Image (cartoon, rainbow, N blue to C red; front, side):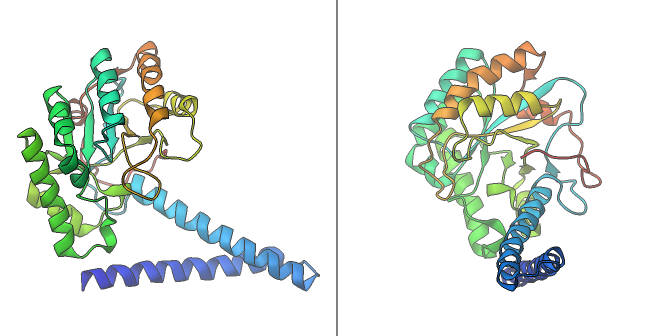
Length: 291
């Protein structure tokens, strides 16, 4: 029933967006005399406006949410120049070991939000992550879409991943992060039941974007970073699939980002340290977020 309500709510939202986009497109093209040109322009504008509205809603939802957010953390409220590194979608047998080598070389802590199915295939990498002092978080079992997943499957996704983390590392994960930042009330209740803190992010490196170069990743992070940021990287994953993405540029960018942050007075600390300075959000964050 809850799944059905979620689907109805999404469809209703899309219907309203489409209606508003059509209306605005008509207003913008009303003075064009050529009927065929006007019709084509209205179609194009409707698509553009619809996509822009949905994307804007998505960004606001991920970075700000709606209503009381006391159980969700996106950043630390501090003026101290500290940040935390997080990596999603691994472990990858190709890129995660390279990232771990870099973190060890620079003595940098990080948190890896692992996909349970990947960890089941590569448990030795998860064991290494924990052995080298990094934190591990739950990123669901197969990177599913939370709002459209039935409650029993959602519960199973979280529980199975917790079990895989325990098997690989002997540690219970304190943190959980929904894929793509999409969560709902069921996810929040399950996280509370499992004793896990929901951690999102305040700055994405955008290393997932096709065509995003290593220099682009470096420039984005170093120009947009703020004190207390939780920075998002990926050590696996792809734009469509949950595994198989090319993270060469992430690996190449990481040393330059670490050195650039150090050169500007930033310290990269463990997520646990950063969240000790964080406060639950009593009202939605209103400042502009970066994705």
